[in-house]
Length: 295
View 1 (cartoon, rainbow, N blue to C red):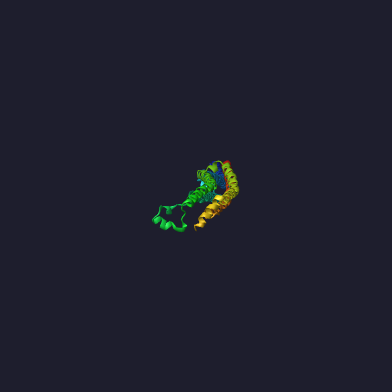
View 2 (tube, rainbow, N blue to C red):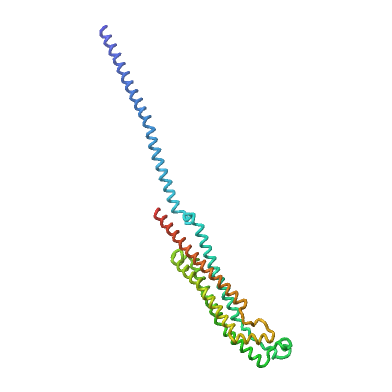
């Protein structure tokens, strides 16, 4: 009995010791696993954080790309040269309007003397009240009245060519300016930039063409005023005390010449603006092409 009790006691002690070892190994393994988990958790969080940052960056890039596609052209085209392009277009339009009004004034200045016959009206020959108001020493009668009427008719025919030439040139230039304005309104120069180069060339030639046109205008008028018909007509009216029939340049002639000189500068300035507009359109098209390539 005593030996059996000691053996049973040793077996109980061994079993308790084994269970303690098993519990210790289990706790130690769990603790090591916990330690590894704690050590591995920051690395996983770092990896998840970096992946989240990449996804956020990709989302921002996607939003920027979408915004660039949906953004109106006015915002896409905003660049430092935008205001300068707008100023060039405004100046070009104002210059074209100036070209139109200058030629309109030239036509008016030539049309006034063309339409004014300035012929003598022999009201004194009607007698009565007409002779009282228009007769006396200032009235042409008989052969003198017929002669002054004939001189008025010949002088009017003599002065018509330079005025007709001036009105024709002014009308053609007005039509040309209206066409250029219409092309600008419908944005044809933007679709076909060479139109601006053609406008620049034509404006430069027109501006230079005003110089010989003005010379021809004044030479022909001077020839008209130096004609014997004009001289005889002037003497006849001067003999009766009538004024305004002198053989010299009148106000409408001088005004037409001044507007012609102004047309030289206006058309040459318009040529310069057309060249600048062409360069601006080329730069804008190049910028649009680069943006489309990047997108």
